[in-house]
Image (tube, rainbow, N blue to C red; front, side, top):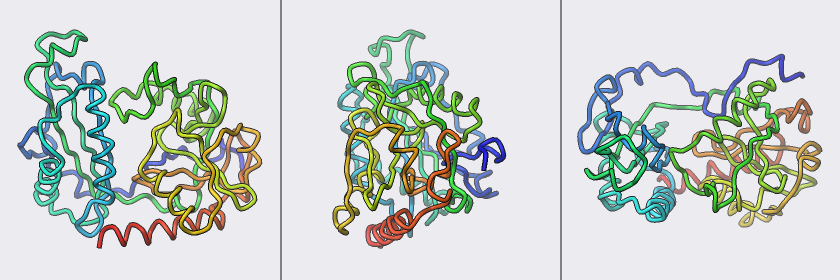
Length: 309
């Protein structure tokens, strides 16, 4: 199958749900209809991408791996001297209020966003943000489309890389996603669904939206994590492999190993484990989710169930 023969899909394609037309959104303590949800054009997030965010999933009335997401959010905000203005219990309560206002219980995706807030002048210096942070919570009824589990997606390796930690540390889940957007555009121009990004040394790193894994001869490989978002789902997959006797390695490897992998898949909060059909026009395995991907997906479902009971 040629990558040009299929319609472009993304790792975040979801089934249409008309309930999302009338969702209510949390903004700084108020919950309003999506049509009324607005932030200032002077907001640091809009103006500069100065903020952090988390994506979380609601299952059976409970947010999966909430503590891990809060660890990353608070660590990131501390690193950039952004005072969230509430503790994790306060965030949990705000999310609970938002879910209740929308009558949401399961198969819900949340995007929690924290910016440095509204500036007094339209310039870069952080001291110009003086009114406190902007906190927004968007929740949608959201289930991945079936084709993400069966058909998988195509990737193209692109020239855009994830940078060095002293440039813009990729471990930040920041609002500043321009490098990922550029990578996605480069992949689209190559006829692929999304981008496979390399690290500054030319080793396989991550995609523009998710963490990337390959399977070779019964072993699961992913990047070292030095130059990519250290995703919560990524770490859960690594942990599950270790706990269930599956050889797993965080290591440097090149496109050579990726092209000849038996399987490849992505990890992310929304799609969990999404199979890769092809990379740069080269079919991976038989082009569908392989036995290891299925096994890890099953183990992950059991973990989600145990975490949200």
